[in-house]
Every structure is written in structure tokens, then in C-alpha cells.
Image (cartoon, rainbow, N blue to C red; front, side, top):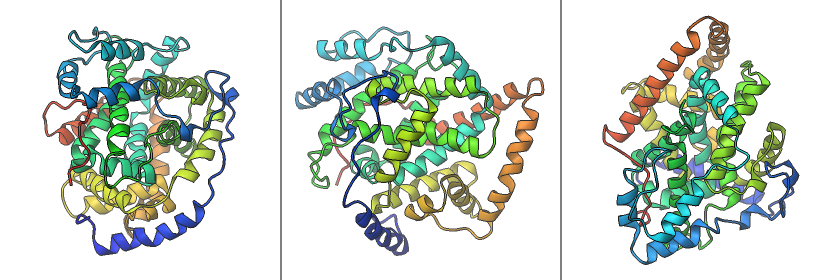
Length: 399
């Protein structure tokens, strides 16, 4: 863990004792499936449920050495309307053909409304899903360890770029249109998760459990749309009910495509908030791996904005403002005596000013142009201008 100073390691280690005391007994799963998009379910604890369709397929693919060829064939599969590539093994083709289908409850009207909502609220969503969601993810011990010890942990720029590919796909105006790529990237991510489940159990650094359970995926899901909606409400961003419902819907569809069972996908924001309140607290806390990943992520963010001595403290303060002191302390994000109070003071008026302009003609479209330019710049920076796509891993993090 050479990336960390001794001080940061000690900060993380000191907090781990408190986490251990809180983790002795984990509450049972009590969220009712009646609150799900399916409206019913068996009520199985999602901590002990994984992906019964993708997991055996990808394990078999890895064991028989077929992943490199599948990655090659999937490289140019980039659009929602493209046929499944020819030449794939029959079992892989059958899986993808099924997995790429939208659920029968998907609503095209809501998906289009979500695109319009993303167009006017891109600034907030980029910050909350990118910076906020990233900092929350490193404060989830199981997720931080899974990232750190899997192949992606060895090259965090590449790992973040591939994560951003899916996140930006969800927020794109054409996310679920024929020329979009959200379906493709969600299905590819589902295959990646199955590979990580299989591979990490073989790592000498792993505890032998099966990672990325249905609950683990729900926890990550709540660090994105649920967290973002709560923060926008906290900032008093005016969001009509129809827009809020549409934004939830695009993430419901994405959850389904990622392999989350319909009986676990919240049907409403009320249900989502209740589920988040149950699963997030019991799954969050500090780890040395999470502190390392946070340090890397904030270093990347500072480099993206403006290389220099000012940008990193500013990024530290922005991250702390977004996720709060407890998560920031778990992540060992330094307190910034100048920037912390400044951001907390300036951000609310900036939101009010921006929202005051939104009703004016052409402003939402202009805002989207700026937000999209930022998104593309971030992706260009992370990928170093090279073509980057989601691929199934064949190894864990090299020793």
C-alpha cells in the first residue's frame, strides 16, 4: 500500500475498530417485496443471492479459456440496435440475446422523459454520481476490497474509465434509443460482475466468500440514483413528480439489465429510500483498501480539473461536502480549513442562481452542452484518448 502515507493508514485503521464493533450482528433483511417493481417476491435475503444465469456461464467460459475470443467478438458490439455478434459460443449468445431484452414493464415514455431530465440536471448528476458515488463506493468495505483485489484495482484510471462508460451511458440522451449504448454496456458489466465473482474466490487476498451479491449491487445502486435524488432534494432543486419518476425509471431498467432481480428493485422513491436506509448503514465503513482507492480517485479528479497545488484541496473539500463528514473521515479525505467552509457557503446560492436561470429559453440546452463537454473531457482524460470498452477480466489484481 505504498500509495498511502503512514498517517492515512493509521486514520483508516483507527476507524476499523469502531466498524468491527458495529458489525458483530447484522440486521435481517426486512424490506418487503411488495415495494418492488415486481410487486411480489419470495423475500429471500439478497446477501445470499447472486446471478444464477450469468455466474455459471462465465465460470464455464473462464475455465475453458474462452474469454479472450468473446471479448474480441464483443469489442465492436456498441449500439443497442446491433445484432448479437456472430461467432459467439452458443451459450454466450443465448445469454446475451435474453439479457439484452428490456423488461415488459419498461416505459419508453418515461425513458425519454428521463433523458430530458438529465439534460437539465446534468451538472448535479455528474457531480453526485461521479464524485459523490465514487466516494461512497470506497466507503463500502466489500466493494472497495472487490475493486482493489480484482484486475481493475491495478489500473484505477482504466477501472474508473470503464465504470464511467456505464454511468455516462445511463445519463445520455439516447441511453435506451436504438443508437444508444446503455443496454450493451449494462450487459457487458453483468458479465464482468460474474467473472469477478468467480475469480476473486481464487485470490489469496480474498476471504473465500462470493462477492457482488444482490445486496451488494443494491448498495451500489443506492449510492447513485437514490443518493443523487436525496441530495438534489436537500439542495432544494425543484423537480416535478413526473421527472423524479422518470429518473427513477431509467435506473430501474438499468438495475434489471445488470441482473438485479425485479423483486429487489424499488418501485417508488419511498420504497427506494426505505431500502437504502436498511442496506447502506450496515454495508458502509472504512478499510485500508478504500482509503487507497479514494486517494487515487481524488488525485485523478484533481488532475482532470487543473494540475497544481490548489486543485487537490478543492477536490477534497468538494468530496467532503457531497458525502458528509462521516464518509469523508472513513475515506481519510483531509479537512481543508479554507475550502471546506467556502464550498458549503457558496454552493447553495449557486444552485439557486442556476435554477433561477433554468426557465429561460435555451438555458437547459446550453447547460447540457457544457455538461456534455465536461463528461467527454473526463472520459478523454481517463482513457488517454484511446478507445476503451468494458471487457470481461481473466485474472485478479497481479501480485
